[in-house]
Structure formats: C-alpha cells, structure tokens
Length: 563
Figure 1 (tube, rainbow, N blue to C red):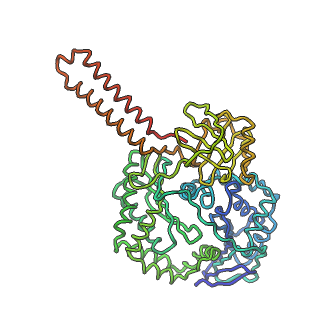
Figure 2: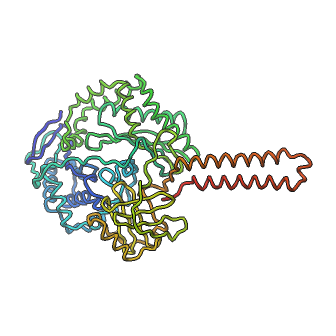
Figure 3: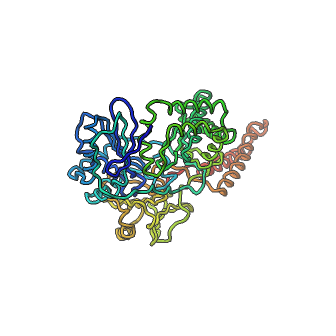
C-alpha cells in the first residue's frame, strides 16, 4: 500500500518495506525543458547540488531524464534526513566554486556514454527541441555562468515543483525540505519533425531499430511484451538472423510510453533481418496475438505486480506521476486493467504503434517498399540570398539571405531560418553551424565557400543571441571538408530519389539490358563466318560499352550521397 503525506509543502509517498530505507526527491525538470543552446544545464545543477553530500558511507546518486530529475539514496533515518536537507540547501545556493570542475566531469561522463534508442531517434521524431534534445551533446555546459545556473535552479528546483518518496519501515521523523517557493511546471508539449508516419531513415551499419509512442496502458504493456517475444522467435530462434532481437518500453514522463524494438544482423543478412522485422510489425497489426500467448504474457506481467516489494519499486515513477498530474494507481487497479485486456485491444495498439512508427534501417537500405515514408533529409525550400559557390567539385552552394542560410545542390536544399534557429555553434577559426528546430543543420565553412568576414558577421548578427554557443578551438582534421549535414547524428543519409528519377533509372536499366543481351547473344550465337568478321565483333563491343555506360549512369544517380 502506498501512503500519501506532505513535508514542508512537498507532496510525498511512502511504501513499507523491511530492511534498509531508500528515499528520493524528484523535480519536474529535465532535458526536454532546455533549449539546444543550453543543453546540460539541468544535469549541471544536479551535479552541483550533490557535491556537498561529500563521500558518505550510504549510497546516493542523481539522475537527469527527459522530464524529471531525481536525487536518490539508501541509508538509515539520520542519513536520509541529512542528505535531503543538504540537497535542498545546496539547490538554494549552489557551490559555484565547483562550477568549472563539474563542467569537466560532465564532459568526461558524456565522452564515455553510449547511444540509446531514444538518442538515436529523438531528433528525427521531435527535431532539435523538447524530447529531441536527448539526441544532442550537452553543448551548453561550457558557456554557462554562475548567474544563469543559479537562476535555472531557482526557477525549476522549487518546493512547488518537487515530490518526495520513501521506501522503508517508517517515515523518518524530523524530515525537512528547505526549498524555495515556486510553481508547478507543466510538461512541454511534444513537437514533431515527421510530416508523415510511419516513416524511416537510414543510419548505422548493423541494426534495425523501430520506435513508436503510445498511451501508457496495460494493452500497450502487453503489446510490447508480445513484440519482444515475436521478434526473438522469428529473427533469432527460427531465422537465425539476429543475436539481439526484442522490444522494451520506457515512460516518457507525461503518460506516454516510448516503445523501442531492435534487431542486429550481419551485413549479408541485413536484408532478411529487415524483411522479417517489418513482417512481425505488420503481422501483429493485422492478425494480432494468439489468446493463449496473450494469457501467458499477462500472467508474467501480473506476477511482477504481485511481488511483495512491488509498491516500493513503483515509488519513483509514482512520484514523477504526481508532478505531471497523473493519478497514482494501486496495484489492484493495475492488475485489474491487465486482466481486462483482450486480443482485440492488443491488435488495436499494434495498429496505432505501426501507424506512428519510426524505423531506422541500416545505411544503404530503404523501407518505402513496406509503406514507410522517407523522413525528411532536406528542407522544403531555400532562402533568397547571395550565392557562394562551393570550392569543391559537386559540393553544395551556400545561400546567405535576410531570413536565413541554405545549402543547395541539384534541386535539394538544407535551410535554417534565423527565427527557427535552435543553436548556432561558432568556432574561433570562422566555422559556423546553424541547427534549426526541425533538426536540419547548415555548415558555414570559409574553407568550403568563398565566405568573407563581412558575411560571417552578417550571419552572427542575425542569429538570436540565446541560440549562440561559443565552441572551443578545433583541430584542423576536425574541420569538415564539405559543408552540409542536414541531420546531426545521421550517418551518411541516403539521398532520396524523386519519382521522375526512379522512372528514368528504370528506363535506362531496361535499355542497358537490351544492349547487354544483344552483345551476349551475338557473342554466344556467332557462326563460323561471324567469328572471323572484325566488324561483327566491333558492333558487339560497342553494344556492351553502351550497356556499361548506361548502368554506370544509373549507379551514379542512385548511390547514397553524404549530406
């Protein structure tokens, strides 16, 4: 049973459990509340607030998520009282003498961190804002000053934006949470960078990844369990195509589940793995789940909620729910909802999951054949402005206008408007990168285009000051030789072919096939007289050469190009 109480105006939850106690202080602030130019500020506050706790015998930690920041510890009553009070007092007056040291620690932490599914797909679904910021480095940290950091803490880490949870035999007496007053902060509205769904993009080498968002329901839980089972059965046990194949979900923090599914494959098996992966998603949406399978998955899920420590384990999530206005449900309510899920409910969720899905396929592959629209790699239009020709043969030209900047090549454009610039990275050597809120970015490199100091100054002055990020000096080898990566994090995205281009390629391929068949047929069916005729063989050689030229043209038109 979870009990509600209050400490110094902060809502709190308690669930009894034997043994060592655990406690957590949760704030409704995370990466999704930041701007791209100030990414990492919440994480920095978390580190600074924990510093005064020092080196203790008890275990404590902090965690910054998309919508919540947690301060956690295990200890006895005295340790819990001291830790919570220390964190609250630090938040009201952060130890700014530690600012530069903690910045260095954050850079080290980031360098050793891997990329999870949310980071791989976030910018493609949400753009360079809100929930999409998990896809980006913490660029804002180096430039943060003490006043900005303390103001962030005073605004977001307040009494009215916090919740407390305690798991233990009792609530420690004398708890105090000396926080500043403030206001409850609503969760940011999700943004979208996908004009169509389901959608796909190509990146990486060895994995197929699927991501979708669903309302947080028992049916969505069981759909995830079913997807996990079916992928493992089809791609690993039956097909032998993957070592890792399965699905999981995570709470986004606002009543929404982010469901992710992944399968790895060797290069020679990627086509088969992708096809099998897509088949599983489609099969669940069309045929649903077998009732016997659903009952087995339901029993497994119900067993988790029947465990004696189920309520204490739910406390961090329940405290986070309090801060986003979601109800704290009892175990009995959760189990009753699980029992009521039918196969039709799971099929309906599978259809919703597929309709809003985002699929990442290995580089060089496509998924339009399965009904997935290509996620935008480029902008709808370019700005009007002065053209600066590329110094690299075949490279994109740079347009600098009053409204923004564009890179253009072969009728395609990557555009960032100044009024929609999420971050403006500026290096001392003159390099610039503008990143739009839609995730499209434009590199402005004097080494790639004839851009003079006046043009750079014009761009610098036009970008909103709050988007400006001063970058440290970079090594010569870190400077791009060719400008233009419309989606940061996308590894050599494949260039999309237009319907006209596809038709032209098909015609050229057919004509090349005719010439090739003519040459092969002539060579294999030549009689004795023809074999000694140089004109005859000359005609066959010319036909084979024409076929080769046509096929080379098709290959050059359709091969992926790095943007």
